[in-house]
Image 1 (cartoon, rainbow, N blue to C red):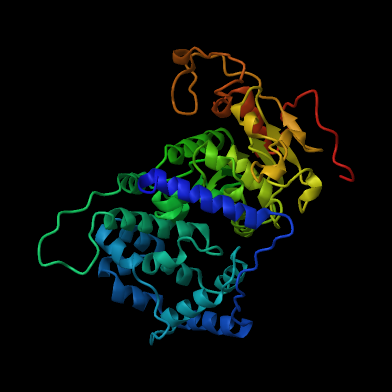
Image 2 (cartoon, rainbow, N blue to C red):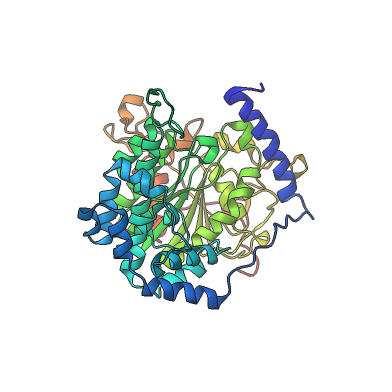
Amino acid sequence: MGTGRVGRDWRRIGVTMLAAAILIAPGITVRPEPVVPASPASLTAATEAVASGSPARIAAENLPPSIAASIPLVAAGAVGNDPSLAVERVAALPDPASDDPWEAGVAALFAGAWPDPDGAVLADQLSRLDRSDVEWLAAIYPELVGNRPGVPYDIRIAANHIRVVAAAESSTRWPQPDRPWTEPPRRERVELTEIANLDQQLIYFDAFGNEGEGSWAELVGDLSTATEVGVLVPGGSAFLTSDNFTRYTGRASTFVDAADGLAMIIWAAAPFPSGWIQEASGAWAASAAGPLAAFTRDLRRQVGPDVGLTLVGHSYGGAMVGLAELYPMDVDRILHVASAGAGFGVDSPADYLEPCRPRFVVMAPGDPISYVQNIPRGTGLGHGVSTAELDGVVIVTTGHLPDDPDALDDVGRTLGSQGIVGKRIGGLHAHSEVFIPDSDAWDNMLAVLTFEEPTIEERQPPPQPDC
């Protein structure tokens, strides 16, 4: 038990369950070491230095002439097409002692705008700069900006493509220093090469998150034209190495393809549990809640006040969404899909910062997630009450699957080949069946995401008082 993947899993269970007790036990508050942010004057000075410098000169010194002569985001794409150059640029960071004001200013600005969990400070400073100055960061310093809140998403996407290519290339290399004999190439991380070839819009990428299994956040659709955006938090085993990486992309894509003006974001930018034992603990949800809430604030800043935002939690992701409601969030509505629960310690909407925020619940009869709901709090396990028991929530119908035998499920199999044409959604497979396109459950989720009226169950929980 002490070695290999099994040993790591059991050690992680012990550590994270201890963390759960510390993080969410009543009366216990974790106070991190204070970080003194930079003064407004020093941030302004750093921004002014960036504005007075020359990113074109830095590009010319660090990139091939043909790439340096391009416009910034085209240059970033070209860097991503050259794996060796991508590795070089990912390893580069701005020198605070540089003679060039732009490079020194970038170093001071990104170091000074911290702590800044939702990117508000950095976004404010970047908004004062010429757009091209900020875009050059993707090509020149992709590691600096790829995951940084406050950086515009199109710049993060360009930077993260470079970072994925670099991670795939680096996975084949042995660490330095060079040896006097020839080393055979290391076996590449195939999933990273596959991701690089998919050219997905990653607004967060960590090849080494989840103990090497990988973390990500991905945009599906066009954010610049979106009138509504859904943020989908996956269930357990949300890893780059898992089928869930492409499965949730496919699920989000079905909604985007069906509605003009809808974009989706899959948010798996945190450690996720794997398996029923780990998923019984609220530790992962407690760890993800603050970053998820901060992400919604950064997203709101990116899209503006008029875009409708829906935060969706599926399975264990619902527990993450529930605990995120204990933090300041900027979303218009919540959608729980086969949710693990309202969040450890949550008994009613009154426990949330915004009790009256609209909440919708999709839960098919017989869904196996129901077996791990409503675990007594005293056990230190579980995820609070079932979301369907929260006052004021709207329970939407799950209904039936399409009656077309050629209709596809959420992984591309025909319903006819599985003998489930027109089947009532429920039982062991209900947890995933709700995502089958054109099913009643899927139609109702699309309605919630696009701010239309879903079909709801006849029996509903009582209304939330004072809402």
